Length: 610
Image (cartoon, rainbow, N blue to C red):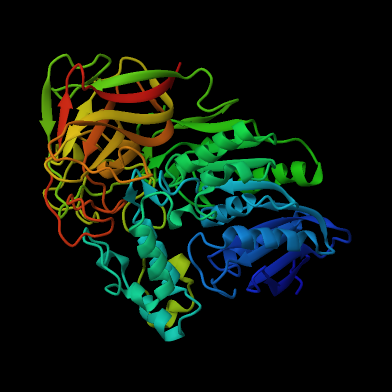
């Protein structure tokens, strides 16, 4: 089939994998091309024939590549059964080698893709295909225990949304079953007490329900989360040594995973890896935006994502031009005037920077200390005392923005129009994403009256600095050391870093901008190789790892650290009973206590640059 841009498309080539399962594959090539060309591979669980992917593939073909787009195993037109993360390494390896053997290919294959389409790149790279030449991995997984599937032991509930989407588009179901599932609203099932096997509509798609429940209840190393296609960090030694780019966003669900992959491969491989970190939320279109959530970063924030990748692949696959990237390119958020733009977003500002390492070589460690009076200072608290709060599983702290992806429900449509709009294009976020003012309001999922600033709730403890006398530029990893106890057998501790603007007429309490956050489930305080029993009432020092970031807190702003026991629905709610993971049939209210003093400081650990 010829396209007006002189692109020839071969549709639905059924490529056999090593176990005989056949995967539906489309090949896009320029009709003007007479010789062999390098190939770009995209493997997807989101329908290879979707308009967005087809348009992208034609652009690559028009740029002088053979673009190969393939449905993952068990998805859309491919044979087999889908299980998140399984078979992707082997299927990817076999596909790369099939491409290289085609008469139109030079033998050089590069890979692209975002999110799960980034997962599958890293998965195949752990098997080191001989003809894999280079990779651009945008927002992909590294270690499912530390982030991406679970974080600090807590389960990311976006995977419930993903499993439901998978069921709504499951090719193994009948049209009637899929249509029934497409009437399901995720918000009706997204509750602190999650449904058991057979209790939710996922039961209509047994393979989707099976992997979702397996991952929900698995948090200890050595189980299904160690699949090669999920735990990339566990297979770094075998990973292909090829030029690569790891790109992501400060408000993406894979922020830390992106940097983790880049850092590890920088140290263990010879081929040059690049790191690109923008102010983005999750997705392949987001690099072209200037905003994340309710915050705008200025016109310079947006990049021509396709053109940047084309130049990079031209260099590594065709030997044309120069490598367009420094070793590290990151967006430093902050520095805006704080006004409201025409779209109603806060002008937070920012600028791109280049570096040779991450964190930048000029970054130095700095610690801010929480105080008994709720302040945040450069010296540790000298007095001894405690600050307490509650953690009620039936009334968790609601999620307002942050690093969220695919926590979405299906927007209802009139039955006669459903077939005209793909399921993926009808999805809407359950909770707001990206940068948001940390204030609840009517209509916010999980919020209850009285509405208002999160830091005024009795289930949140805040430590707040004085207005800054000069800019404070934080760039790099963030962690919080804190000594806590509680009256229950298990509980969660969350930490959130906030850039708190001065009050204005638009925001009388000041815009409290979430910069990054983290969570730790107490049973995993000693790592993920086992669950450590907690003895109620025992003061225990823990470290909550937040996602890395780059933000300038400008003069007059305050630095705020919020501590709580939940962040729902971003993470599953801890019932505080010590029951097995995923068992939320019974819950109790926990009363965590923060212990402060010279020997038990609350430390906010950051890296700063001049």
